[in-house]
Length: 365
Image 1: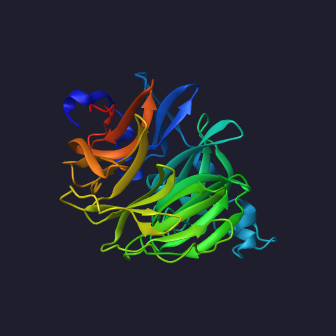
Image 2 (image 1 turned 120 degrees about the horizontal axis):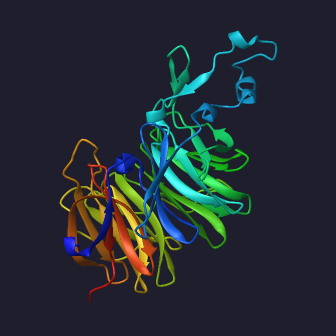
Image 3 (image 1 turned 135 degrees about the vertical axis):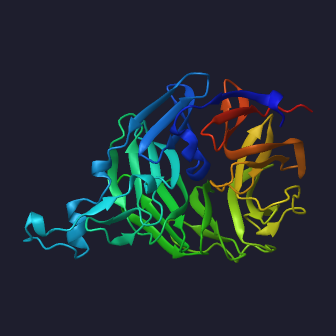
């Protein structure tokens, strides 16, 4: 993708956290908007049709557990005086290590996964990390219960609809796979995967399925509601998994995973590899995003999103049915997501200077 394909950019505010947590897109009142949370715990939205950006603070006073959580976990007694009750407090800069968006009862919500040690006791002792929370996009107020179960920071986070309602599904640095009913906070699954767990989830044949990987070179598929493994490990990986996606390609449910600098694909039903690995990156792939463009299933792959590396990365676009690269690489940007704006397919990227950019993905051949 060349500079001629850049549609517009948004800069001059704290959207730069997108280079770490991701910048998902949701449709709001008919307009696609990006969503991110900065290091002060402020929620940012930008209208991708060319409108402006709006900020609103998250209600951080409600970021900790409710009182019954302390009692249920043996941290308080019912007869403790208020001054005897040690409360957990949250670090705003760590509250949104990962961000995704969804809709609950017709209202848009932001789901955040905390970073390492995102909550601690008031006396300063580090306790744990990886709280998952849901927030009302319009008000910044917390929805439902905080979802506690990870030991360290959240690595991957998404939502999937199921017969038990909307599920929040996440993995963390220790490799734990967890899912909760988003509105009730009831835990649905707890399983152990690879450390620094990558994950993607989707509804497959009416059931929510998650695919996990990480530092160990293997991929595992899970039925989220039952907690059962689906078959054996997906074969052929040579490196730790850098990113995972699940998509449809010519009627097949396909798992994509970053295997070092290679993008590999498997048929989820048969668990067999599809074609040869897609190559073109000189460094490891760290993010995989999918979209449908001109009737074609495509994937976008981006490199390491290290916040200390201000050069950005290389982003490539792939035709998944043909197994070939589309167009020229885009360099100097971090890959965030893909969406559609006024009928035009676009890639959303970010820069270390806090800017978010849109790129036209319309096929040129």
